[in-house]
Length: 195
Ligand SMILES: [Fe+2]
Ligand SMILES: [Fe+2]
Image 1 (cartoon, rainbow, N blue to C red):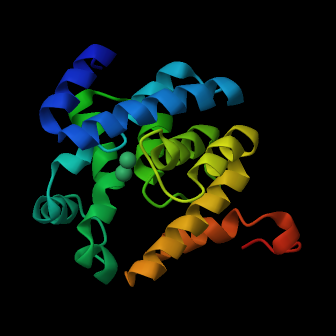
Image 2 (cartoon, rainbow, N blue to C red; image 1 turned 90 degrees about the vertical axis):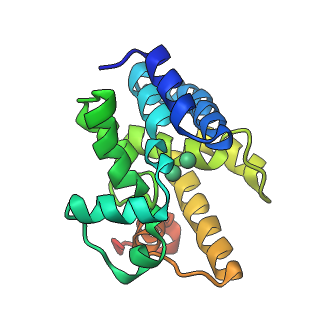
Image 3 (tube, rainbow, N blue to C red; image 1 turned 60 degrees about the vertical axis):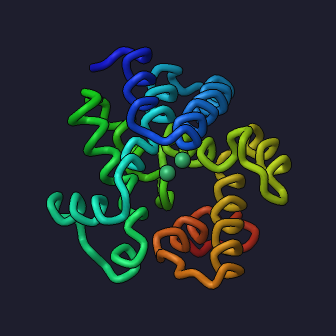
């Protein structure tokens, strides 16, 4: 596996400036969250740095790669191929960066939409992506504070915010995002139902 320094250099060469600095900022907050919630620093660093490694591909390339990897080409992802970048990123992290940790690869895979039953590392990467210090949307400060108190609640708020944003923009909502939001709906709002 590549050393952190090599990973950073490779990402810097392959990603656009904005995406590269976003990845570094995601790493910074992922490390802080990992420390707070007792998750290994090394895994948090790796997963956060690499979470967007597949963003070096454009729409057409993402779709091509998805086809080659045998991923399901549903209508929404065909329309919005960047939804493949988590899965393709996990593949790339293994193949080109030599990552072997299933936990790290899963966190990369799941960060785009989240998923029911995420591990602590998955949750940290999902949130780090949304709340790194470069993000500026209404309520982001509150969400940052919440993340350090309650990962599940922060995921619920984060997925909800994402859905509100997409509705406002009149864009399609990929169903796994809704599944994540329902799964992390606070118990008080879903009774004993498992959604
Ligand atoms: Fe991403
Ligand atoms: Fe990201």
